[in-house]
Length: 238
Image (tube, rainbow, N blue to C red; front, side):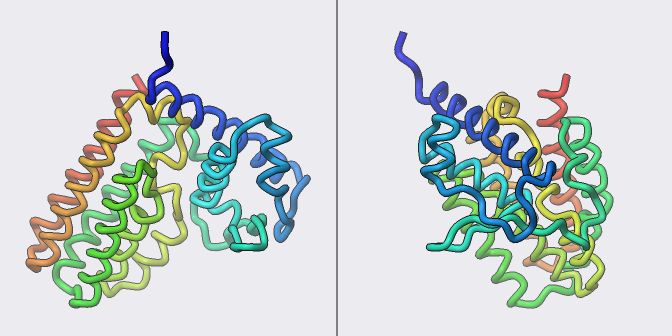
């Protein structure tokens, strides 16, 4: 029986998860310290017997988790642990953990959306629109769009005019995006392209409420967005 495209995608992501797990364990064990350069793509490909695409996906996931940064033309380097983080990203690993994170976000971001609707400037709205557009481009290209997703919510925090919203959100970092913390088999189980498309529509609804200076609409749209994320995760946690 021929292997379908979705099966190949799941296999590639499972391999990427394996590479992420190994490299992360080595960082935690001290094999690589902050500032150290990771092995090159060809070296990782050779060590794990995987393709360049798998290696790049693994590095992308580690970037999203704030573990490494890639300097184009130079290499990928280990980042120091974030001193501003209020949550240990290493503890946010199970579906239950991620759902608990979403509960925190619901309490925080619904009010942030309402304040953003009241206080946002045209520049704030433009930056939200850029994040929404970037998100749509990336999911159309088959990517996870983690950075664009995070940026959209960060721009809302900024638009509150309250620096503590932004500080807390930055401190939480990419742990706020569920798909950076779950294994790829579980991500695939919630029909990734469909749920990302739905996420994009929910972002648009939030931004429309903020654009109209409609605090109640923005608050409700954000609550629905995050509650929907929680329910999607609940289905794969059962």
